[in-house]
Image (cartoon, rainbow, N blue to C red):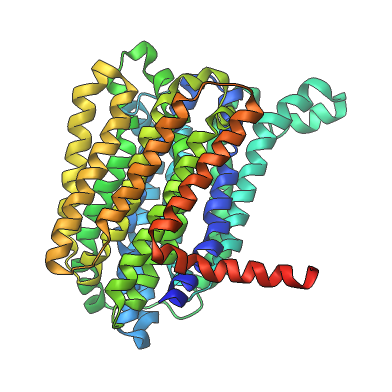
Length: 506
């Protein structure tokens, strides 16, 4: 069992190169956005990308998970399953791109950006391409090719970062400080009036290059379509799509609602502040996303083994402990991490601990969700996600006019906490896993107690504050190792390897 967790951890680490490291590089653009753009301009970016997330879920319609399930069930037909999945997604994605091109002016007016239909056009193509890439990426994961996955992901991220830096930072500087020949050259590709449009242009270029790199994965075998397989997959994946749609509503609808429920003159500015603070909390979700990429095929592969439920329970505990270290690492060093966003955006830092805890429960919910995916009862996942979406909508609509973007932060926490409880309750009935609930919540309360204790300690000097934070992190680590045998067993092989590496130097 320990070897299985080590294998999962290894794959999580490799996927983390492209997901955590890659997305972290992308998030390093946030300081650029929040220092070079005004709060309401960053609000526009956040608003547009909220729609992107929702539409990609619709266009992929759960086919990633469907591909994993049906290719594992019948490995001999995995190529047909892949082809059927990619055709299903391609039909919707290409139709969407065509509709975006035709109706971009109407859509821009509907979104209250009538003067910028080009934003709709560029992001429409990005959405279609990203949907088309979902299944090839899933194939790389299913084939345990994390290195290729990471290479392609990082290439796209690198292109996006370089273009953003060039258009937003380098080009304006060169226009103001270079010789006339350089200014003339740069002016051929750069227009000062484009502003935040360059964020979307960079994304479009990155998605296009990434899609080209994935074409060999798509065309490795002859593309075919099986109506029988597609019908079976649709029955399985449509509830997943509904669950995914409700889940993404939980993640992104707050940004859309803030735009419409706050006073018009301050809405985009408040949305920009909220979104910048939210980016800090997403440092937690980077780990969760990397874990998810590795865990989903891992869970399916371990399903038929004798001790599968015990393994899932141990994975859950190790996962929560890791999340709590991330939580404490962020909150105990917030005096440094706050510089991740521009000065005008830091008034929103009070929502960060709420959002971090919310993301922990989202990660716990993902671990719990294996019961309905493994047993094929995906309709339960849809119901849970719909309940969560309703909670998100109700809390946001009721409280945003009263407490502003704090309502959105609390909506996340309440939503994920209730979804976690419902999933655990139903899961114990249909696919019982012996999760160590008592100890998991003990660790959560311990981490929260350390965070609150840290808040009571007066500021002395920055260095002394950092030392105190390090001591508190060590206290939490010793508490976990002292009270949990499985944590010690999981960590023992790592410590053994470190010791072996040190021996030759001694």
